[in-house]
Image (cartoon, rainbow, N blue to C red; front, side):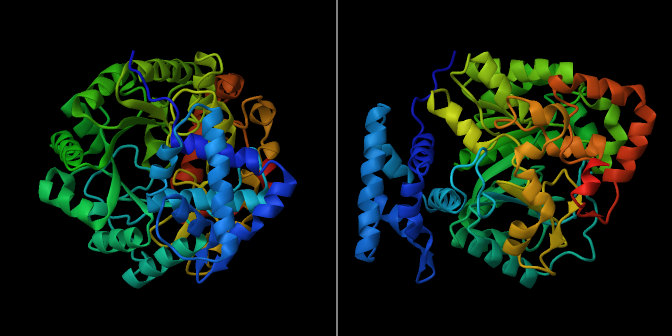
Length: 504
């Protein structure tokens, strides 16, 4: 068994904030942190002071710095943690952006379960429809660039909008973002604004070490390279390009060598379910930080291979296996299936929980509360997606058109959208998901619910607790496949549904 580090500084900080803002008096007292002074939120100024940066400010801001530092020190002492680690962590401007967003959410909404934020923590930006691969399961049906894609000027304006909203992280996806001529310009612009820049890639361009070096210099901090099998032939067949596996492996080695936070992304289906342990061994051998097993969702070209989807029993067994392998290996083993939070809680008898595939704080009692804070599926709540033409959707796997940044400012879309606001309220979930005691740490995959039932608030048929729903779908499988094709494989996107249409 691999020994994990004990108290994670972010877990400590977020849990302390949650407890502090649980009291209405404290929340009101802290409201000053949500004001802007000279274009900067006061809370960000305070966090910079906590990181021992030399910044000037008013006496009130100095008072809040003293107050928060005292609270963190007290909480660190009570949890047998090292305050200086928290202090060191806050020196990262991207982390400060994330913490700023959380504090603003606590001031605005109070403590909610799961937590609401005034802007998404993460934007996954399908940067282009252009792609040099022909992946069997591609949610984007990527191939050629769209004629309606955002211009460079519009892309730069979008970065400015996301910065103003307070978005902490941007993940560039596609299509294949690394082959687009605007790629480095946009990376540098986002990094300049202290956003955490991530890239989801097939790895083809990153097989060139010079390209990886340039990515790091531009400001990329995290890369997620898609590898779907330990067998080169199987991977190449799934990805539609000979030599894809070999270049993906080179890409991973180059990323690790140059100090990028590196992950392997694997879409788990019946095509590769027997390779789970081998994929984890490969990830360990390559020295990546984590391996993320993605839920298969029948959207885009994935509608053509819907028969490869796991049933709830298969998925449940895999998730339990992933948790156990996570304890055995150096590499962190994660899943995008929100049920992974429940499985980790059950496997550890309540001592450990993995709140989301974006963040795994390791096992300690703090993380159980943190899981409800982060809250499983983040679609429309801590995360949103943007299409190559500027269309905003709740999730890259959820083709529901919310609006377009050409028509409305991003923050207005985020705040006013009917569907996004409904996705933030777990009390509105239908069926078993709405009654489940784990709904606050899981909530079911909203994209799977939408793909299979047509209801984004409906039951996730991939969960063991919705086995009856799955069996009902299987009993009329051909009809289901036809409806899924119509619902998720075509563009343009559906207009945003009204509350009444969600139940139909």
